[in-house]
Image 1 (tube, rainbow, N blue to C red):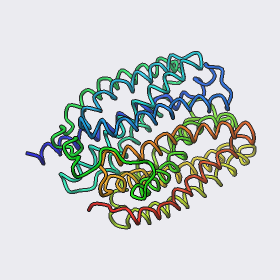
Image 2 (cartoon, rainbow, N blue to C red):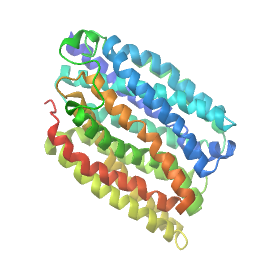
Image 3 (cartoon, rainbow, N blue to C red):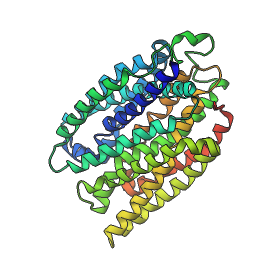
Image 4 (cartoon, one colour):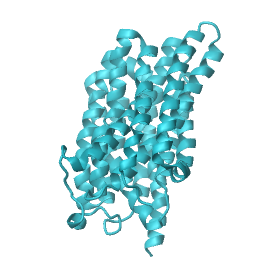
Length: 401
C-alpha cells in the first residue's frame, strides 16, 4: 500500500516540478520586453530582482517549520495558488512597483513550493529505496525549456502579458491536479510528530549547523550562476551580439536543455562517483568554459555572428551540464544531517541559497553598468567554479543510501 502511494506521489511530483519550471520561468524569454515596458536600466532591473530575493528568504524560512508541522503536501497547496498569481502580476506590470510586487509574491510562494517539493522527494526516495531527486529537478528543467521555446515562438503574436496569463492559467490547473496525489502528512516523514528525533528549529550559528552553511553557500553559488543565465542570457545576445527577438532566447534554451540532460543522468552520476567528485569537476570545468565562451563569442560577433552564437551557446551548454546535479546533491546532504528535521535542513539551505537565484542576477545588473554585461557575466561563471570548490563540504555530510 505504501509503495503504491509512494509511486503515485513520485509520478505526481515529476509533474509538479515540470509545472514549477514552466510557471516560474515563463517570463524569461519576455524579460527584454518587460524590462522596457517598465522603463528600467540594467542597474534598476537588477535592483528590482531583489524583491524576489526578499520573498524567497521569507518563504523558505517560514516553509520549513510549516512543512514540519503540517506536512509538505499541505504547504504546497497554499504556495501552488500564489505562484501563478505572482506571474500574472509580473505580466501586467507597467511600473516598477507592480513588477516588484509580482516578483515578491512569486519568490515567496515559489520557495515554499520548492521546500515542500524537495521534502516530498526525500520521503519518496526513502519509501521506494531509490534515487530520484535529480530527475525531479530534471523535470523542472524540462519545464523551463518548454516555456522558453513557447515564449520565443509566440513573441511575435502575443504580448508578454498575454503570454504569462496563458501560462498562469495552466499553472492553476496543473498544480491542482498533481497536489492531491502527493504523499499525505502521515507518510511524508516531515510532520511535527517526529520532533523527538529531529529539531523543528535549529540555530543559525552553532557547530552542529556548520554543514548546513557549507551546503547553503555551495548551493547559493550554483544558483547565482543559474539565475544569471536565466535573467541575462537574452539581454546578452540582444544587446551585445545583435541577435533578433525570439532567437535571443537561445542561450537560456541551450542552458535549460543541458540541465535536463545532466539532471536525468545526475542520479546515476551521484551514485557512481559520489556528490563530491561530480560537483567538483563539473563546477570548475563548467565555470571556466562558460566565462571564456562569453568573452570570445561577443568579440567574434563583429566578424561572424553565426559562429559567435555557436560559441556562446556552447558555453551556456557547459554551464547547464555543470549546474544540473549541484542543488540536488546539496539538498541530499542537508536532508540527511543528524538531529535536524529534513524539511528544516532543506529550508535552511533554501534561505541561504534560493534567494541567491535572484540576488546573483541583481549584482550582475549593477556590474554591467560599470564594466558592460559580458564582463559582468564573469561573476556568475566564477560563482560556478566556487560551487565546485565547495563540493569538498559534501564529504562531511552523511548521504543516505
